[in-house]
Picture 1 (spheres, rainbow, N blue to C red):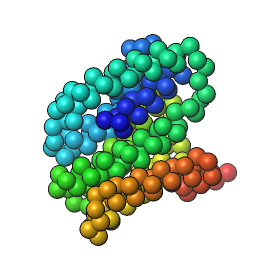
Picture 2: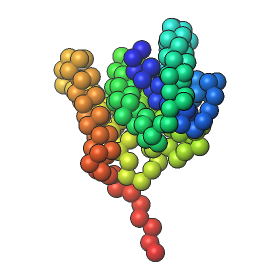
Picture 3: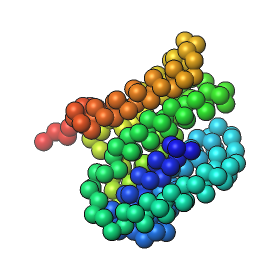
Picture 4: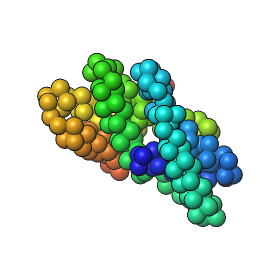
Length: 195
């Protein structure tokens, strides 16, 4: 639930920065928070989490309205949402991987479901806000961070570490890689066109 709220808030903040009204901000928040988990559940043949338990929607909508009302008259820095987004990316990647493993998915599929859960909401948020998604920007450690966290969970679970150890380790790896990209300018290799 906390992870969903965090991603919902990043969507609301970005929508607010773009000058959207409360309906637009709530919609962007929903897409950001639920997009990756929805696709994961559909691909795994599970009941979609927010349909199975509407508490997610009720709490997140309330949070979206509160955030919107609190920050609508405040000038927001362009990259304000990046820190909560990085935390959400790490949490969603880990939780998506664990859900896939518990659903019986093989290790590679479980890792991919973790990456999808982590990155898709942010991709949809950026597209709907008319930005190039972070995952597609040169050198950003976004999908790389999600992949690192997801693979850490898969490996530690295969080595029979406890779920809390695997989850915490995956979270630290994903958040650490994303933070290294944001603050230390670590970059993934990217295409350099010939001139």
